[in-house]
Length: 160
Image (tube, rainbow, N blue to C red; front, top):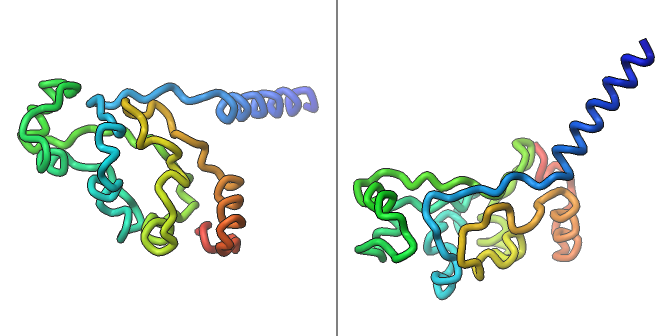
């Protein structure tokens, strides 16, 4: 029985280490969006909810089409045509937080006036969509920022 428990513990430990330590497979976005080419604009121009909502949101095709009448050189013509027909661009979410964590862009960007780079690093300088989160968003990173900024460190402020 002990041998079975040890084997189970070893298996679970190995699986947990595998999931936590190995990098995720890079994501491939549907369009080769360059944040660097759009660096002159505020992030909230495209990520509209960043200032007044909990979620910043991923831009819909209509946001792109307000400035781009024709497909940018890097855009795949088929994907751009789909966007023109009001088909959603199937962007993949890069940054994820666990379900038990409450994060509000409105609180951090709108009220606290933190720069987007605080959590998203230098994604604005990237010429291609980020294949992975630009920085690890975990409890240690959040607590370090809360300490540095003098923000509340009460567990109930972020954990539901």
